[in-house]
Length: 389
Image (cartoon, rainbow, N blue to C red; front, top):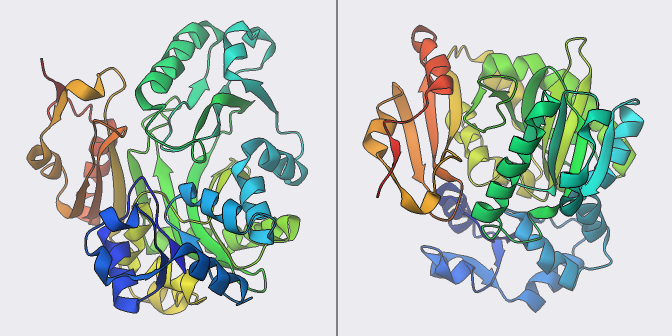
């Protein structure tokens, strides 16, 4: 069963639902989607009654906006309580602190950020919304002298993107301040099956242009990346399952691996895999349909997949609108954008007058062309995104 909500539904997900006639909650938003009449739509009362009456039913959503439906129809359920807990980054920090003792964090309303004595906080540290998406409002602070500029940047994010997402998804009125975690960052799409065992459908390395970069410019995966992280990530997720007592639940987790090999979670997003259409990269890289894996409670055949010799790297790139521009007065040259990489697999254009990104781009890089990823990561994109008068 699935709930579709704003901000974005990928064509790959829609085609999966149509081909398999997965039950979909009928909403006003669903009727705005292409080929909505071909979906297996159920009215809310029918949909949630069917879910309640089947203890083994699986429920997925593309967006955390769907939480409001769960709260309305399944308000006191275990599912609703898990969503509430996981969406509260402060609550999850309490859980993670037990797993990673000594990690600094505190919660503060936005209105108090300007009065905060940051000199009392050891640098580097990170400030971010308690609920957030797409790196909006997130900043790494390496110098106390930068704090006034960072406050202005956060205010700009509030002004430009405060209305782009619902309060369920993003809350720019309350922030977390936490210690900066040095190390490689990975993103994991996984679910806990009916027995609480973790099943991994995606592992992506998240590359940055530098320590202060917090963009989603480059995510990549490959056979080698999966092999590198599969066992330790699964072991860590087993600890998460034990701590949360969670079953039959999809999630997206971002975590960092310190130089001494410690896994420290950054956040968990409930009910979904990687946002917008990011999780679709599994279909390009491994011929995996992550949505069906969860809905059918099936694990990818990683042993067979990884036994196949494939040296290529698959990337998902978010092309952000630079924060220095007014999103209402920019243009994007998509032809030049796709020419920057040698093997573009798909381009998903976004309404960049509303959202903070111009496109999601999927591509493949061979070992011979691996240098293009470093160029892409540091490319200012001034030739494809520019202001207009």
